[in-house]
Image (tube, rainbow over all chains, first blue to last red; front, side):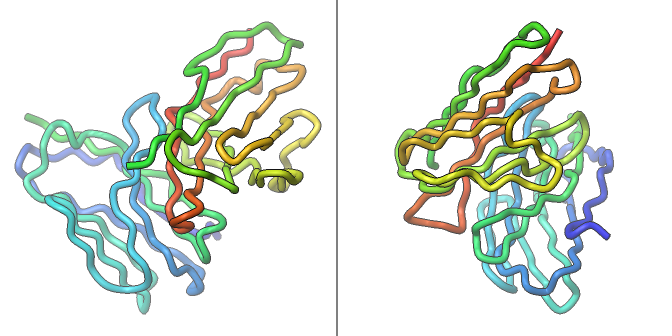
Length: 110
Length: 116
């Protein structure tokens, strides 16, 4: 069983839609949860990071962590074509090593 | 946000030659850097963790004699792919962990290596 599971998609939505991206994990010891955005042929860019459970909001992006269900989500409101990318979730115990999901490919159609 | 510069962005080399990839943290110190490999439509696979001034820690299945890592300063780590073969062709990405905020790691732009 993989440490982190993420549906690879692809996911296609119309401009303005709310996008929900999710990851599940198996190890309850994870403490840090991150979401990265990766454009084609580029390195991942950190979007959000959350410590332990709870929600975090930054502009159109909201990250949620539910440790009881071992489930994390990233919501994108008012999605834009420029949001089209691959979104990777990542988790860490102490920040020393990161475990990545496979990434979800998102396309926002104008 | 913090900037990590990875160079070169892409390289083509002949089989049997060696290629060096540099990863620099431009505006922060990074005692720890990570090297990943990414295949098309797949996630990042951690190859090794690089610590300044000490030997790198390689993940299981990664040949340390083939993928040489040197982390000689707090802002620079290098990955050398020795005696490259076509199966080494891949996207290599480094990330550097900011010593001030150890829970955040910032990625370089990646290096696309093609071995012909």
